[in-house]
Amino acid sequence: MKRLKNKTVFVSGGLSGIGKACAIAAAREGANVVVGDIKSVNLDGAMKEIQAENESALFFECDVSDLASIGAAIDFTTEKFKTLDVALNNAGVGGDNTTVAEMTEEDWNSVLRVNLTGVFYCMKEELEPMISQKHGVIVNMASILGKVGFSGSSAYVAAKHGVLGLTKTAALEYAGTGIRVNAISPGFISTPLLTKGGINGNETAKQHIIGMHPLNRLGKPEEIADAFIFLASDESSFITGATLDVDGGYLSK
Ligand SMILES: NC(=O)c1ccc[n+]([C@@H]2O[C@H](COP(=O)([O-])OP(=O)(O)OC[C@H]3O[C@@H](n4cnc5c(N)ncnc54)[C@H](O)[C@@H]3O)[C@@H](O)[C@H]2O)c1
Image 1 (cartoon, rainbow, N blue to C red):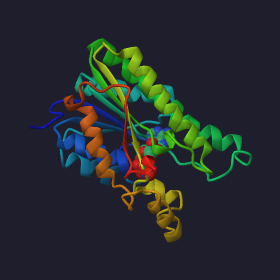
Image 2 (cartoon, rainbow, N blue to C red):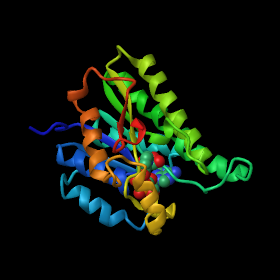
Image 3 (cartoon, rainbow, N blue to C red):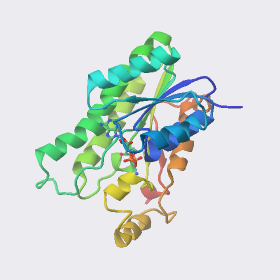
Image 4 (spheres, rainbow, N blue to C red):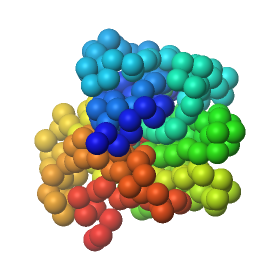
């Protein structure tokens, strides 16, 4: 039995890494998937992988840090598929590796704009159809760094802490309206984000990061997708305001 059969699922940042794995898993579970992302070189390849699971999947070019752009993406989704059953707010960037004193205002703003304000903009637009239809599931992609600090990543850490606060508050505001709001906090997952952050290409840094996870490896995007499908489906019908840590034991130390 497909767990998201005929549901409409919107995934921000679905052309790469964790978002792409979640979009593929949702399509495999029978969902009509809309991927919202800034256009990238991955566009055709990623969409082919998602459409291989369910040919109804569509792409809409959008920037989560622009309210009008994300509004257009959600309008496109509801026009094409009539409802918005599940939204995964996953688009994110890493930012520079620098101390608080040395961080530029520009880097701070660019990380917060995508990783925190972008999640707020997405939720604001997604809640509108969900409130009217009286049901919906929102899943926000946070991080273990939404719960603990990490030297050199203050903007990212602050944004992800903010995402968890936003998740809990929206869960309370919409409890009883048929809308559930939860978050996933992945540990370090092998994706292009880690390559951009200099971790995948640097064996010493990679081994250091691996050693921070009691399961002694990096996570795989598909392992986050499994958690997403659980939170998106009725299997988690009594869960709202929660964070599912999928972190190889990172936060248990
Ligand atoms: N990889 C990890 O170790 C890890 C750990 C914890 C949390 N996360 C979070 O998971 C999410 C996905 O990360 P990933 O590792 O798959 O990264 P990734 O770089 O592989 O994918 C991120 C996607 O987001 C898109 N994106 C970036 N800015 C955007 C914008 N303004 N509007 C629309 N789309 C935009 C990119 O084009 C890309 O497709 C992020 O929120 C990240 O913070 C990642």
